[in-house]
Image (cartoon, rainbow, N blue to C red; front, side, top):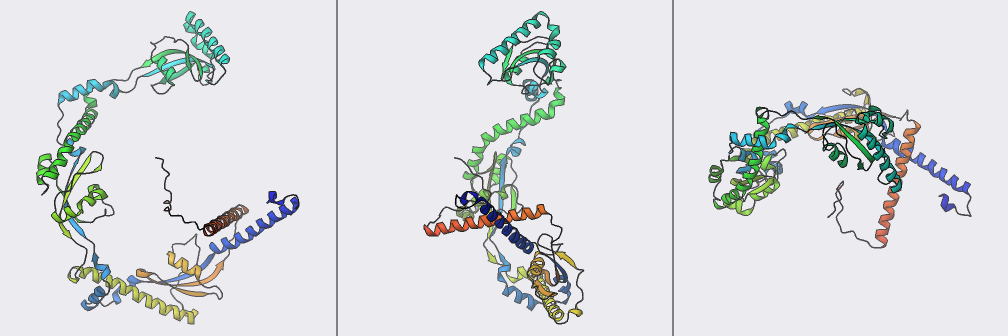
Length: 491
């Protein structure tokens, strides 16, 4: 706005326009947010469907009529009974027996790894020389380190004294350069290599790192305690069993795939050959059911089960990989296409649904009658809840339908009444007593609302301009809109 003022319009005039726009946004944002977050005091009378169930007359004729009038509620999707076998690492492990010799050999070969990490304690003197420092500065720092090293060669016991006086590492200088115990991977590699190459009490040559030049003294070595074979037996067995199972699975996978294909009439021969359990399941559909686990949660396996060949011939599927080191094969043993259940099978469900629907209808009729009576004579209203203030932000435990109805109710003549159909839950009558002004809003909240309103208005204007450009230049965007939150991926 200030830039647009140009030489022909005063800065003062531009500032006045900015303030006018801010004032307009402030007024408009207040109107918008006060309407959006308006609070209303209401009272509610609920007519619950369950309270009317005892008044419903349930007989065979009524249930049949409901069944015939709502066939979609008794539509059963296609489903199948299936059996399947799973070859995974757990199945392979069950067939492996570890020998004592194998365990003891594995113990000897892996003792150093299983025992833990050796730790070393060292002290150092650092002369700072960052890697990006001028060459002359680094050369001077190295020369100083070489001088200190020469002094230490003459008097090694002065290491702590010289470190306190000369080391430029503030974290260790006061402690005589002591760094405490550390293992491999804790220090930069040149420092680590030098430290783990020293004998206890030995002083290194000058060691160069990105931080500068170090003189290192190894002061102690903490070797890990070697656990006994019996202490490590559970770990040894688990590790070795996992390794052998992975090798054996790789060998068995191809044989398993061949077996389910070559003996496709059933899974019993495969189960016996590989010592696998045959699992069964009923009411299996083409898509994974909510809460499904294992193979029945795999869309890929279900797709294989419902392929035309497998569905019609009830032959084994191919071996399907549903997870790393996990193969499954299955077959359909019985298939039921999608159908409307006959009344004989749907009798109980039809009776339950009829009772619920009729109860909700009676609740609605009673609620509508009360609404009409209370509108005509407000003093006759009984059974209303205590007054409570609700808003879009604070529903106070009321269903969304009641909140929406209360906020959309006319306010030209208060109190006003509105009925709310709660579907299978029944009906509600809402009495709107008054509008409650929003109070206690500090300037920070108002400022945030003004900013939010201005941003929303700006976004709306930008979108409108964008749509105008599309129309003017006859642009068509044919690429699908990206899913919300989809991550960008690079090839």
